[in-house]
Image (cartoon, rainbow, N blue to C red; front, side, top):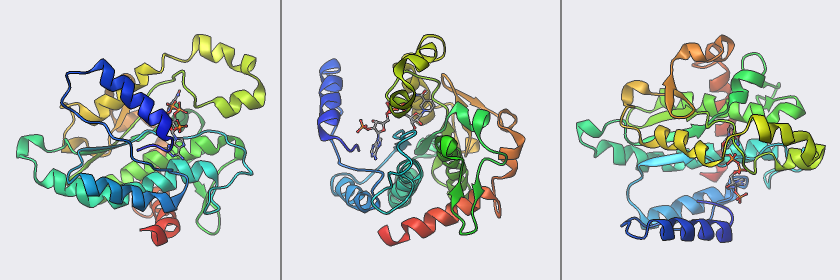
Amino acid sequence: MARSQSRAESAIQRITSLHSSSRGHLHFLPLDLSDLTTIKPAVERFLARESRLDWLNHNAAISMPDPKTKSPQGHDLSYATNVLGPYLLTKLLLPTLNETARKLPDEGKGMVRVSWAGSAVIEALSQSGGLAFDSTGTPKDYWWNIYTGTKTANLFLCREFARRTDAVLHNCYNPGNLKSNLLHNLRAQVGEWMLRPLDWFVLYPGVMGAYTELWAGLSPELGMGDQGCYIVPWGRKVGEGHLRNDLVQNIGEGRGSEKLWDWCERETGRFT
Ligand SMILES: NC(=O)c1ccc[n+]([C@@H]2O[C@H](COP(=O)([O-])OP(=O)(O)OC[C@H]3O[C@@H](n4cnc5c(N)ncnc54)[C@H](OP(=O)(O)O)[C@@H]3O)[C@@H](O)[C@H]2O)c1
């Protein structure tokens, strides 16, 4: 699922030509995560073709758009794209994921998964407790740190779905610091040259991000006992002690993660 047909189709063409003997099939399904009206139609198109789903990977995200730009439903564009869209997509696909998981033999338990892209910024830059909310229950971040808030929200949603699901394995992964298009808004704002040292010394080739994602989605080392686990580059599960204590303490019933869930429910309810 992607929002740009031409980019998706050129990626499909490249993958197909690299693996011409594969029996797999790739199809483009239009979905704009920032627009809640597009999520249910995308799910319906998917379900018209498929009756099972083994892995839902929330990879898409944006960072630092113009803060004045809102989603079609009037939400902050980063929260719409990185949090509300993926939340609604997961809710609508959960029955199919559950059904797929239930049909698996015992040795396949834990192989039906939902993976959420987190980031090193969760631990490095998130506010105390990870997320804070205003009096209406809406997440609030300093404008320069909204991306971090959305990535923390991805970890929190992973944990909330994990708490409420028994057949599907949810996990959250930091794909690593990678050369990609993610910082294009920041590059435009501060100047390409300001970020050159990042390119030289901090960022890895983009393809390496796929190692961690694929491990999260496909590794047979993970089972239902790893529900809600956190994964770091380049495909390694870490224990709870890896995450900051104030984040861990804000996850669970009656805490920040549940407040986030309630907000997502409220904002997406009329699009289900
Ligand atoms: N790069 C890093 O260093 C890094 C570090 C930690 C975590 N991450 C996470 O890794 C994931 C992948 O990031 P990346 O570095 O590959 O960034 P990227 O190159 O900017 O790719 C982001 C992808 O999201 C898609 N997307 C954006 N808005 C969308 C929308 N409204 N609907 C549907 N798709 C949309 C983009 O599609 P278009 O092609 O149509 O724009 C693009 O395919 C993100 O979740 C990011 O937070 C990245």
